Amino acid sequence: MRSAVLVLALTCPRPSAVVTGAAVQVNGPAGASRYTRGQSWNSDGTIDDSKKAGPINGIVSCSNSAQPQTSIEPTGVYAPSDFRISLPANTCIEPSSGSIVNVAGPTQGQPVLWFNFDVRARAHTWEAQLKGQGNVAWALYYSNTPTRGTSPMPITGNELSGTPGDVSFFMCGVKNAQAWSQGLHGEARV
Image (cartoon, rainbow, N blue to C red; front, side, top):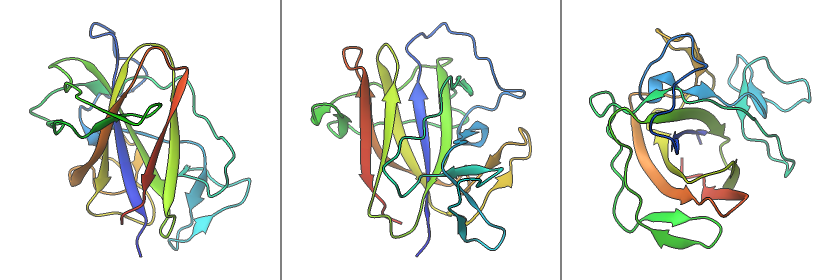
């Protein structure tokens, strides 16, 4: 069984925000930032679960300990010509209540954060938490070609897993402004 590679797209609440933090801006999944916490891949495709795992981490831990990554900046702006985010009606969730909500996709030029992380094979569930102020819409995609490791992206040099150009929609939702933090829960399907 292969590990699932997940890519999370977050739309930022301020459409006029300036995109910073990336040396080279690439719109779409190929410009993703890699989760820097959790475990890492060994060169033979096994997982390094040691406390000193790394230097390229990004595999969600099996333990229930929080391993937050803070101050994540947008990685690009929404450009449908690079990657179209289409959110199916009546499928997005508001995690704190579990309610179904309709979420409008991002608009042309809106700052977007693409975030790459792995869920290990046979991990029946996974969990992530969004914190921050303001409404944040999110869409989660999985790689149709997951890998057991990372490789540098040609333009950004960022180490990512999976094939950024070969992803499928998994789930979507919104973190509302009233909630301090909300968890995303899912089943590993790959």
